[in-house]
Image 1 (cartoon, rainbow, N blue to C red):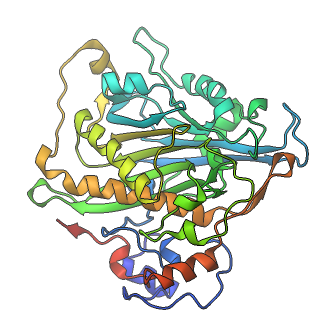
Image 2 (cartoon, rainbow, N blue to C red):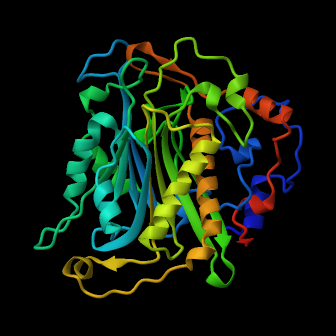
Image 3 (cartoon, rainbow, N blue to C red):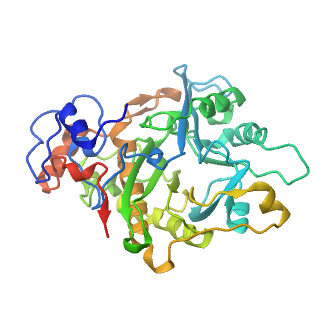
Length: 405
């Protein structure tokens, strides 16, 4: 059953005000998304779920692996990892989608990124996992490709590093296997997306707090170019130093206690952007590049040791596999090049909020060698946001209203 936006707010008893208010006096119990805490990122409205799944046809699933404790034994654990599966559509291996990519810092891996850049199409589900498990995930995705005389697509598997000194997971032990990939693919669904220490983000650390998986979306219209169009993002956040962290421009990280034994600059982020706006590959390259703007607004500088990758795709122009590989003619449509500015803004805002959602939803975790990574302290963070007059009550337009540009 679907609910109208007004009914949703009535049932959930959420305030319909947008004023800056003092909500910081009450302690925060549990974990909550950024908007529910009063953090308002950007200017554009969100989709129904404020998730990448607001783009019709896109589905997300996680497999989370948590077991063992104490001293690290390679091949045994402790295990704090998993895999996140993203279906652009369930028929992606037969109907390709135009895509674009960007890599502001390449100390990491996103398999298939060169083909995606050269060919301009996405032809596989995407999976996000840890560094040691890319090969196993790749092998499983390859099984989904058709077995005929046409070229096979190259699976897209991205990684961020959850091991090493100060890490939570037995990365070298490679604990993600085919059955875990299949489970994530099979359980993938539309609707709300689980966030925080789940899936590929299970063992990740973001701004020296517990990080992981986060998602968000934005909705825009483009005047005579039509709409409403949705832009959704999902991230696997494993980057940044505490002092860099900013939320809605507020230097939150500078006002929180420093880390006594910082992990150092082994950090990365994966950013996947989906839209139903009709765009071509060169335009999607521009969309992917704007993911970096959202990343930067949370404080990151894409450090020397970071693997930062962004991939954007459009669901509006499916391309038949046979026509693509046999060189047959097919038609595509596109928003005018000079009318896509709202989509660029939507991308930056969605990525920014997805990262903050990952931080807000992640919980404390103890992993290998009893390494402890705390979650972002939400009560203190709200106090800081209030001190900077950047704490807001939710307004109706924050959820699902169309922005007329």
